Length: 84
Ligand SMILES: [Zn+2]
Image (cartoon, rainbow, N blue to C red; front, top):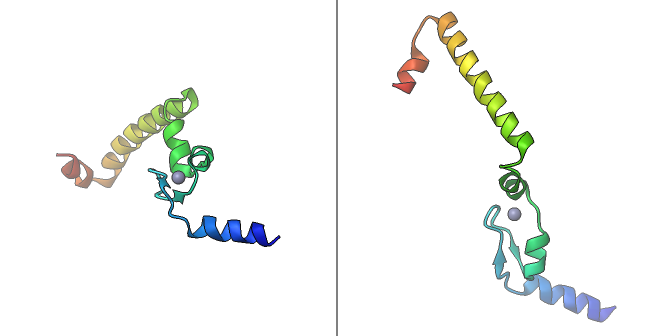
């Protein structure tokens, strides 16, 4: 029991050599870093998946359509000034 506590305390105090480049969280073991999954890392690894690309294309189409409609209804050209 005492050994477990000492090991845990040493691991806690040990310098964390392996840093996740997505969330800057440090890990003692490289295997823990490889098994680690944060939201930023998950999104980066899934960026080329078909369902993510479809969602991005749908967002782009939606954004283009709403951009045109909002500039028609608002009357001012605030958005077009930002683009030019
Ligand atoms: Zn991370």
